[in-house]
Figure (cartoon, rainbow, N blue to C red):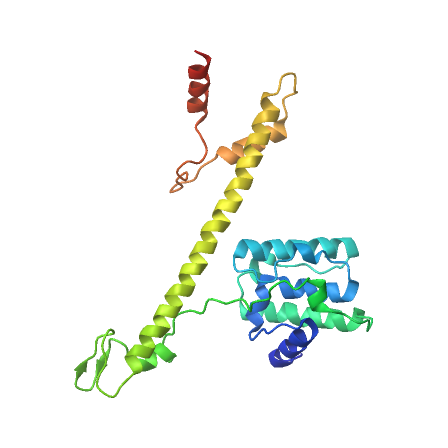
Length: 253
């Protein structure tokens, strides 16, 4: 099997990017462009090369999934795993991508920058867990017992910069996690809007005059309105049917 270092070197050279970790492939952008280098007709305008949020990663993989279907490439894409940017899942898929490229690339010239029309390719960040056990933060014993007493995180002893380094590391991780949280919120809103559009479409169809009762649409509507213990409808979300009818009556009078 090709090593991680060799895979990254091949990928960076082929696509003229600067990935440092296999996990960064979890955005789907690099995978898409490798496939484009083989066939030359993947819709690169729909690929977000500097994707930063999981919903953008999913959209990239959907582009590639459509190409796989059109080209009859019999390879399942485990999107739900790859977008988590885990090393092992992406390493296995990148190894498959490399083998597929070796078998199918015809040696034709390929200009990756021109194909993506100069779109930015900022190396995507991957969220790393806080260090534990023998990790860097643990080695600093921040807030732990030291010879001569405890040193608070906000201060440092004369001649020592380790606590300040630890603070900077933690601050960087908090900032990265905040960006990740913002992305999750955008992803939630993105899918909620999709469900809202589906709800309105189903409701319009069911209430249209003369339309036959469709059990499939009724089933979809039941799923949309079903709830689970602990679920709270987001503020300003779906309006209760009774409230909707009440509003209509008020407008009528």
